[in-house]
Length: 409
Image (cartoon, rainbow, N blue to C red; front, side, top):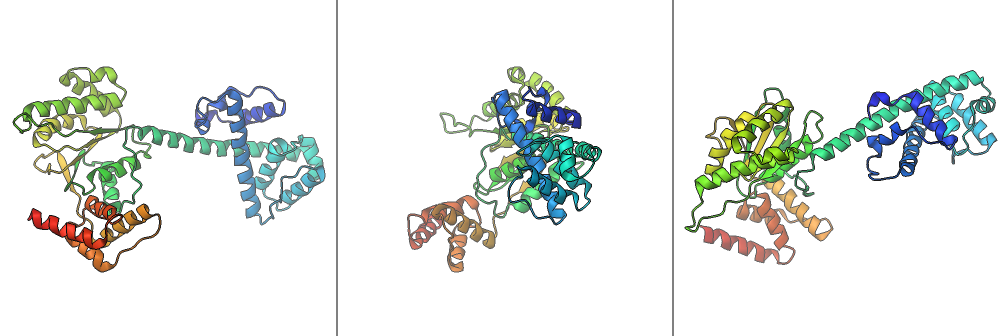
C-alpha cells in the first residue's frame, strides 16, 4: 500500500466502521504491517489491524503522559467517572499531543468508546475543542501508521533479499567485524570496487564473511536484490586430473544460469551463454544488485568466469570467495582474510565451548597459547578443537595436534 494513501480520513472511516459493525475499507487490509498473517481471512486481518492501531495509540498516549509527568492509570478506564478523571488529568498539562491522543483513544479505541459530545462533557471543555483534538489525533495516528508501514515494508524487503542466502551461523563473528565494515564500505561507496575477491586459507572464514556482508546489505534499500551462487567442487577425470576446459565452461554456464534463475529470469537461464550474458547485462545495469559467488577454487574456472562477469558489473557488485588469489586479474580487488589474533582465538574457543556446554567456559591462557601454536588463528580449526574438547581431555587433544603437525612436516 502506498504511504500517501494512509490518510486521517481513511483512518476515521475505519474506526467508525468498527464501531458500527460495518465492513472496513479494504485499503488498510493490504498493509505490509499485517503481512505475517499470510492467508488470513478479512476478519483476522481486521482484528490484527485493530490491534495495530490500538497499540500505536496506547504507546503514543503513554509516552505523552510520561513526558508530562503524569501517573499512568492502573487499568483502562471504563466507567464515566473514571474516563472523566483520566481526561481531566490528560488536559491539565496543556499539551496538545497528549490531549489529541487521549481524545482519539477514548473516542474510538478505549474499552467504552464514547461520542465527542459526551467526552466534552466529561472533560469540561467544548465539543469543538474535542473535535479539534480528535482531528489532530487522527493526523498523528496516520503519521505513526505510515512509519510502522515503512518499517514493515523495509523488513519485508530485507527478508525478500535474503531468500537465496545460506542460513546464518549464529556463532559470533569473532575478529571479522572490522572486515565486514570494510567490505561494506568498499561495496557501497561511490566509485567502489565492482568485483572483490575474499581470499584466504581453507577454514579461515571466507564464506562466513561473505554471508555476514550479504545479510547486512539486505537491509540497504538501495540494493535491488541479492544472488548467492555456490560453485560445487570440480569432479576429477578418470586419470585423476581436473577437466580444465570442460569444467571451466560448465562453471560459467552454471553460474550465469543460477544468477538468471534467482533473479526470476527462468527463460533467460535456458538461453545460450552469449545471449544469457546480453540479457543479464541489461538487467544488472538497471539497478544495483549484489552477486556472491562462493567457492571459486580453480584457476581455469576463474580465467573463464571473470571475463564474463566483468561486463555485468555496471551498477551491480560481485563478491567472490576463493582459496587462491585472484590478484593477477586486474579487474578484481583482492581482499585477504588474515588469521585471528591470539586474543580473538581465545574469544572464539570460549564462545564455541560455551555454546556446546550451555554454560560459560574458559581455558587458561597457557592452554589457549598451546592450541594457537598448534593450529594458528584459523576459525574452523579452532572450532574443531573446541568440539574435540567435549569428548577428550585437553592433553589428548593437544597431543593429537602436535602429532598432526609433526606428520605434516
